[in-house]
Image 1 (tube, rainbow, N blue to C red):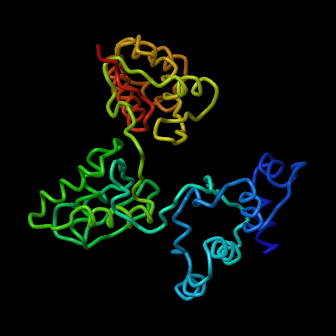
Image 2: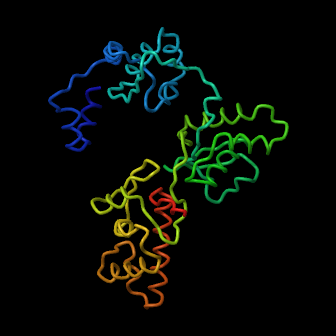
Image 3: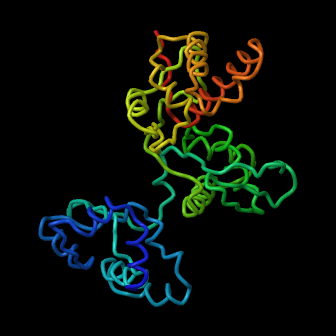
Length: 317
């Protein structure tokens, strides 16, 4: 264990080492001690920020069988810390008087929106004979022989990065499978399994970003500000987007006051002065071809920004 901890410290940034290991106030406690302290302040354990860990799917079956019979949830969580050698938690608390429902209930998904993180593997036909292969946004592949799983993933990919109402997915599955007696329970079970594999996410609302770049593109204000100061911008999809040289220069200009042609004129200036490293190959082209290539480069940059959740919907009068 000490060897693993030493390897971790060797590979982290100085800022992390200072913040997590060398702070003036640093008093590590066991989880059960933390919860005893929280209890004295009228709080109770809700879950970890990532609830997937609670089910112990990363553990060997024999280990799960040993932990499952343990008395209460605090005791089980404490032993899971020991088994995993987990020294850092992301624990969520709530007031003691809140009645918690820890049993799985498919009706709890009503009113939620679902987003997908998987797409059909390139070169495969998701509507052809199974099994069907998908790949997530981190390049990890999964295969399923189950048509309803395929249908859910295909629909989520179709609207990505927008979110879909849970009830709408249920309605689609029920319509496609006439005679399906309990589509809600079926879809809920499928989505739960996909969630445990980090292939879908659940959200309380839709996000009003533009999935396609409008004629007068507008990046949301925080992204415009961050593009001026660094290499990453926070998106409305709650992710940090690494900006290309073009994206870094383009985002601050997307305030809704410039058309495509005006943006293109700015990009020509940047290209001429050598400030677009990701479009440098266009500089040697004849003027007409260069402008056409730069226009395509602009559209690609705008579409990447839209799909990343960096552009807001245009205001309607």
